[in-house]
Image (cartoon, rainbow, N blue to C red; front, side, top):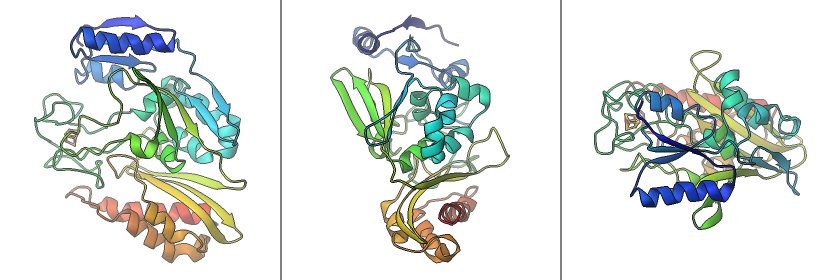
Length: 335
Ligand code: SF4
């Protein structure tokens, strides 16, 4: 592991200023915030991440879960994954979020990992994590070992000829379906970015994964209130029952009127370079019958969501698996 400088900040403005000013003074020095460290420390040990300085933000007062006036949630970026998943209001009003978090990692990791850090979770592409291999995300311009290598668990949607890495987070899939808003404090003040605009596609710059710029700090995640009686569910398909990343997953939310689906939102994980949501797919099932009667429309919605998939040799099975995952989740939640 490369030697690095360290500072701890207990005030928001101080943390942003520390990071922003240090970048200027050191002309592009790699400075990172650190909270739970469940991704960053791992990658530093592997020499995949080699920051010059870490700014510890565990002292910032961002560890609250609060309800908003519309019945939604304001989640501090420092809220631990385990605390968010077990919060009574989250469990009763947003089961999709609680289920998604509890389906990921281990209890020990969830006790350390934070909401802000989970949003920035790094891909599990094996070549990204091994400096012996070419990887455009780790070292821009070096190539992509995964395209002709082991890519079974990588993405089939949103890929480019430069990177096919999948977003590994479960929480992010639920937040995409919930249309979360990301609150960011930066050098020029506060801004709010819808999660749909937060992640960038790899294109020819796979090392850029979000709209964050140097100095930006995620402070909160806002989730709007759901209609009374809204139902939600997270379904995760994986190679083993626990401590495993999704091969395909679906976060689904429906508002029912009798047997009819009044409104629906869903996103999928394990298949995209970012949590994947397609509004046109949701339109297909709105106003249609749910449960077992909805099979034909659910299949049509799944086909629309997977439209444009570009599978490779080892992950072509994901196209059909993802369709079945979504159809099963929609059937279950609307029954
Ligand atoms: Fe790197 Fe992306 Fe290729 Fe994996 S898929 S080796 S992360 S460029």
